[in-house]
Image (cartoon, rainbow, N blue to C red):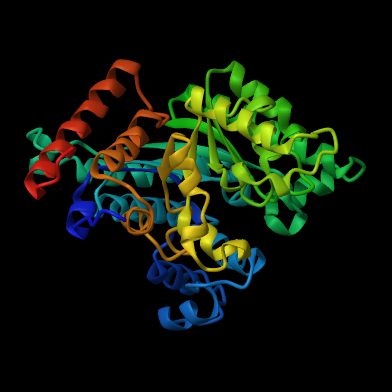
Length: 407
């Protein structure tokens, strides 16, 4: 029997957003505005039209789900648009109680003749810094009554790409026309990793490196060199894995790319997804994998709505989600949106979806939400992070007492 939580309580609680894509989280009104000013044609110039044609509540498959990113990326090709969208994303998060946000994006999708990788990262930083300054000037935060808003940037490298992905990738594939695709992808991620190290050292709030894109046929191991460089430069790692592929993808992420967190991890308990003939006892393999992840507190960034929209095996029933088994195995999880626009959701919605459909007590909810702060890749010293986590715990407990929830 699910515990009933007041929606206002869920909205006010201090929360984290550890898995949100910038190019999947624009305001619909902003997408229309930017497209109009940049003379980019959309399937519709109204919000209702775009919701009907592109950004739906349900999708036929992952291909249809990803269609909207072509539109959003098309308007995010200059400094002004990137800064505006970053600023609005920070504001939208704070307005629903998110106190800490890690925004992720692939700079190589936004590079062109007018803006380079440095300019892309600088623009997003400028937008978030503007929002952070505005938010933290509020009297209740300045007085210490409420925890401040903080953020970090996660830079994405792509598992695979074609020249049509962006101007940058078009030139990259042209320059390396005699190189195999496998090596081209590896070179591109290594280039991105080198940029991340340099930008981090320049002072940009980059907190982690990520690998995203099609899993099947594009193994994480191809990007070992990039992640090895990141690992040796003391930068955290999170990897999209177990979303469209099986437990082996998660295994590769944590053993070959040193992943500290896993994006999605949906198929961690799916023996039917194991393809290697060398794994004879699939149940034992999964048990050991889950045990390792649990003991090392490798957090799974769970995106319920996104999974519901892209995974036919769920049969439009969230109760079929692996979250139940994750909770039973006492794995470290964080509830995230993935994409606020494309999935038409918020962090509060994701939490409500979880507590309405799974057996989560007030204490368990607190553990989940606070662990989001603890397992964040906080940009600052360890002592500063501890103090920041404590401020959010204190505020959480104040709200719980106010709403009558016994922790």
